[in-house]
Amino acid sequence: MTDTEKLQQMVDASSRIVFFGGAGVSTESGIPDFRSVDGLYSQKYKYPPEVMLSHSFYRAHTEEFFDFYRNKMLYLDAQPNPAHKKLAELEQAGKLSAVVTQNIDGLHQKAGSKSVYELHGSVHRNYCQRCHTLYDAEFIRKSTGIPTCSCGGVIKPDVVLYEEGLDQDTIRGAVDAIRCADMLIIGGTSLAVYPAAGLIDYYSGHRLVLINKTTTPMDAKADLAIKGSIGEVLGKIKSNIN
View 1 (cartoon, rainbow, N blue to C red):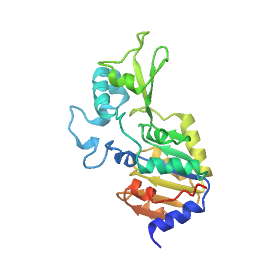
View 2 (cartoon, rainbow, N blue to C red):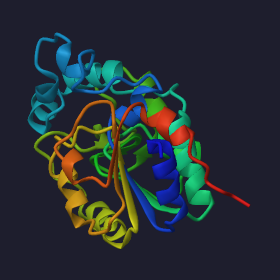
View 3 (cartoon, rainbow, N blue to C red):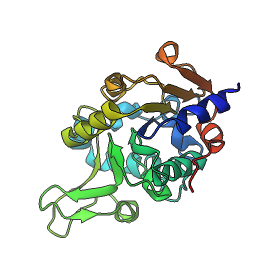
């Protein structure tokens, strides 16, 4: 039996699938990840990306933060790839109960997924730190310098920067979904970013699937580990919508 057939068999037997995904899910949509050879961390800047995307850098060098953010974090023209589309299809078929993502690009929702826990926030939500008026990502992209609200307050992206904590309501929702899952598919992540990667420890079922281009620390614990492109692998799965 091939890996695809094994995966299909597991999907067919499940009704509360949770998908836990990382940057590798969006690389096939043209959004670079952080840790691969061509990723953000391999590129040369005045400061390391993890410094420029930190809360303290945002506070101390706000204009420089936004220059970097606009150039390297906003991919508003990116489109969902086969992985995003298949997950939305599985949700529509009543097979998948939630997507838990470390990505901030909103592509799962763009593909049609409704139940999405965005652990690191979203570029599509931006708010004035003074009056809390909301702004979309297009407003940030078109702005220059430090984006400001009509009230004069600075508009901050609703993304979790380094040194900031994760949203507790999002964490609770993700943990509950993973705990209740009868299948957990982990894809496109090296499982190197904590505390997000630690959430998978809440899964206690027997259908743990890992799909990634490189090995991860969890491969040995998986019931099925597939080395490959997340879009290609999931694209072959039938959701069995009647």
